Image 1 (spheres, rainbow, N blue to C red):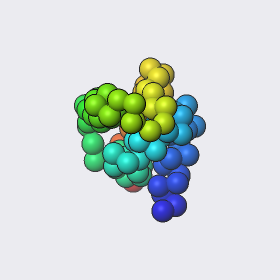
Image 2 (image 1 turned 180 degrees about the vertical axis):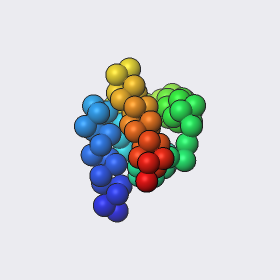
Image 3 (image 1 turned 135 degrees about the horizontal axis):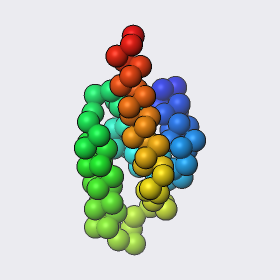
Amino acid sequence: MAQVNASNAALTRIEFNQATADAMVNEGFETLEVLTKVEESDIDAMIKNIRETRRLLGQNAQGNVTFPFLSIKRFKAMHNWALELRRIE
């Protein structure tokens, strides 16, 4: 649980709002370890999946989930950082 909380906090530090961070964690991006097991294209697919799901839910979609350009870039940088950490360990 502590790792999930830390991951959620990291997502808000790179300027995703709380609703977006929660949506990303719910998609399985709940720990830094997960980032070492996915490709950058998986990140794009996760964002697309969340957007499409919310579009289908329409007004029933909960929270203000947004994916600002710079936050996505920072998340991809975090992904590369996690891969580098795993490589040097």
